[in-house]
Length: 298
Ligand SMILES: [Mn+2]
Image 1: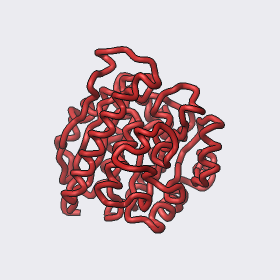
Image 2: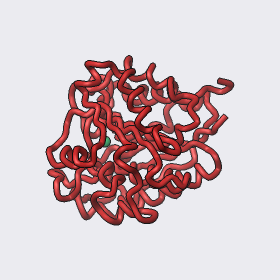
Image 3: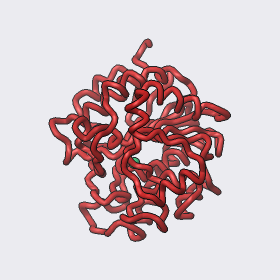
Image 4: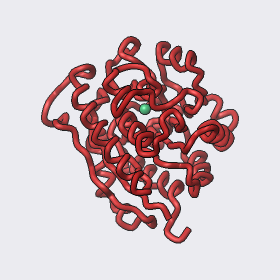
């Protein structure tokens, strides 16, 4: 059975609200993790060179050196894990870490532009510096992975892009700006907006998403931004958006990828423990993993 290897990315530099940098450590210390019925290890938690508790920076270019650095280290860690035939699971931290996670994955698997990705998110995360209203880099990782935006991130471990638009899709989108929507439309990326999920049900949408990411690829991953879920169910996130996905629909659907060897890695990001209520979001992370990972002996 494939071993699950957790890698924490304790950075909030991509976001406007920085407490997501505390996410991986709170998750790692949670009571349930010790008794998790999986074959897993916690490899390491990577920290930025300076945390937001140590220094204050506005969103935008001043945060870029910290983001480049942590994305690079996450990418190397993920790559090394895959080369040992283990499955990396990145726990964030803000969503800009996706640049590190998926760049590391395609290098580890030698699957540049042949890798599928399902992006579960309330937002599109497809801005560039030209279109972003906030300057926060966690609004840009999907554009970067598709080859648009900050060159140092697009070409993190070698010449980008990492992903091709026809191998990517988004689920749960409901909060976005025109500039990023135009980019994804121009590239032809399939977006399952929240209205479509509500109309057809998550199960049907997820099946179609899997077909997209598994067509002509050498594997696929899941990038789960916890803000995709309804803030009533996942209050502990950096950027909540009302009326999201419901766990009672999402969790049972995840079981269909549980023993899929093509699922090479996944990440769960934007956990902000300071905003959580009665650990609801922490338990949601646990339940995602319980539905996604094969238990010992399974
Ligand atoms: Mn996101």
